[in-house]
Image 1: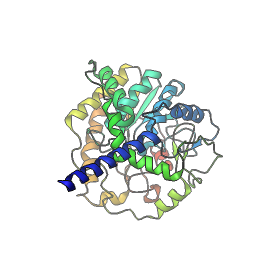
Image 2 (image 1 turned 180 degrees about the vertical axis):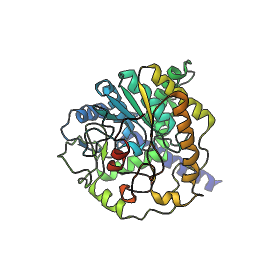
Image 3 (image 1 turned 60 degrees about the horizontal axis):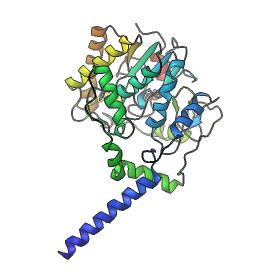
Length: 352
């Protein structure tokens, strides 16, 4: 009995300590009012050469603030890190038919991110085109939990507007569960050890995107330039046959999610905005293993995307296959991230 009480007391103390840490550090500004995302977004779009990537700040925080500038851009990009090399302020310029581009890509973007960021962007303004970077895991729910921290309530609001239903719930509980979540605790500890409790807004000088700078950089258009250290180390790594399993195991291409995404596309068109469906390629080595979860997910997903394009009269650009878009093996950072030059090549012509 004494041992049990001691164990319970230790567990309670540990939970209380974690909650106190997350409440105090609060890396995403969930419990204390934060204006960093707003400040960063404003500084970014008005900067000359971009800003350093802020330490341990949720991209969704400032990318959601960037949606407020969508009226000032001809084309807006939604998607995961696969689309973060797309921009109009780069040496390797993507989609030259776009006068200027706003990149709202966030790491690991799930369908919930697509729905939320699309609604936020089009609620603030109407770009001419909305470029939707669709990944092999996009047509499935619950593939990434990071959206819950920043987008829990906006996602419900977006669903109600796009699907024409009344919101039946709120998701404020996700804010409080972050107090004891492993992901939020990791971010708090990282900030604590870096001594960077207050993220900084730091302008940068122009750098060669093929080489990178000392730190990762977000350009004025919201696109990303990796650090020189990352570029060098990533290109030195050998890409494993079949790649690495990343969000392609388990359920993909859920019929409910496919239907929801088609509804999203129809809503975008109803707003007078032209949707464009984009696929970015995976490295050649991934395609050498037919049994790879990546390949087994990509083949049916690409088929579905092309069917949606025909069904809804929406342009489709690119492919998951590097040979189709003519991107060589040296045009990748790793097994699933093509370089800006690869993406520029595959988007060089206006979509049909």
